[in-house]
Amino acid sequence: MKILLVGDGAREHIIAEKLAADADLYAVMSRKNPAIARLCKKYWIANTTDAAAVAKAVDVVADLVFASPDAVLAAGVTDALVEKGMAAASPLKAAARIEWDKGFMRSLMVRHRIAGLPRHRVVQEDNEAIATIREYGMVAVKPLGLTGGKGVKVSGDHFKNMEEKFAYAQELIAKDGSVLIEEKLIGEEFTLQAFCDGNVLAFMPPVQDHKRAFVGDLGPNTGGMGSYSTGRLLPFMNDVDLEKAQAIMQHVINAMKKEGAPFTGVLYGQFMITADGPKVIEFNSRFGDPEAMNVLALLRTPLPEVFRSMAEGKLLKPEFANQCTVVKYLVPEGYPGKSRADAEVKVDEAALAETGASAYYASVYEKEGNVYTTGSRTFGILGMGGTLAEAEGIAEKGCKCVSGPVWHRHDIGTPELVQKRVEHMKELRK
Ligand SMILES: Nc1ncnc2c1ncn2[C@@H]1O[C@H](COP(=O)(O)OP(=O)(O)O)[C@@H](O)[C@H]1O
Ligand SMILES: [Mg+2]
Image 1: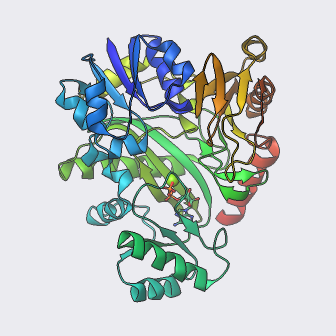
Image 2: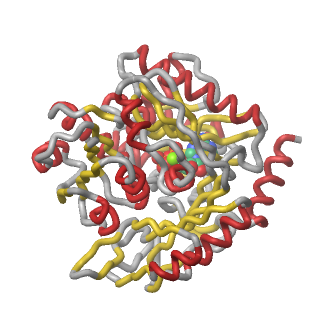
């Protein structure tokens, strides 16, 4: 089978590794990720958010296409490649709307009475925004479109007072014409990803990501500093939480089909478990990055077969190893602010192999055989083990095998931090 992957980060590196193990891999990348390039029969460099440019660059008709990053899906890259005669395991632009239009996502939940909906309003007028913020008090103020994880601001985390909330809502109205205002939810967040064939979902193990830059969940938001999974329930959640989240995602898939935009691809549910059960923060139309590494490392069923079954509308049930995983992202000095670009970084592959960890290449580029940072995340380092503590220890050892001006959060996946989540949830459920 010939499979075409579009994308070039660490998430795409592990997807590429899984695809190349059982199929012929082709890729379109915006810059040469050396690790993905090594796995390909052929690759093309093109602007991956320009659907016409991607379609023009690719001179092979693959059996199957999987376009991966959010902005690529929003640009209609799947649609353009389907037009060239390829089957797709990633969503068409109309289905990916569940991610690129948060207003559509909320209104879909309203139209179909989907559970887990927080109080919210999409507003176009400054006065209505101010009144809504006054009414809710603690809020999340959200742009409707994609912002690379950097557009949402939340009371307590980003806003010091009411004036700052008003000002941000007004700024978004001036820029985009509208803004989404939600009540602030209190709880613990988790990610639930599922393969989907338009009708049926096959769930992957739940994962918890860490958005904040610094140890102890301090500092600015990032693309994600790392994540952990037990391969089963997360330590702070119970079976009912998981079942409710799964039911919500199935309801979403049914709603998308009814509205004429059936969802084929990976559906990513971002939930907050509150005192009142799981609520929906948002949906993404793709794997999470880092969460893809936690789950794909455990996948026992060949990924090309899973993708083919999705494209054919006959989803097979994939199997996962029962293991714990911890991912730690190595990021350049200064990240996420004035981040150090164009610095040379090196993975000591022999030492890494001895630790049992894996390194996935993220936002790096290769020049004359050397690897350099861009401003974004550099390597995802994955550890796997029978316990979270073991997986965490392996990931830490793996991080030590990388040289160059990069750093990471030492606390992700540690028993202390996980216990903090458990205590928080226990307190809320009282
Ligand atoms: N209603 C809410 N209550 C509390 N926190 C929220 C809420 N909505 C979003 N957040 C926080 O902001 C983050 C980003 O919001 P999200 O809707 O996922 O946007 P994006 O990932 O596109 O930036 C979430 O991971 C969550 O931590
Ligand atoms: Mg999100």
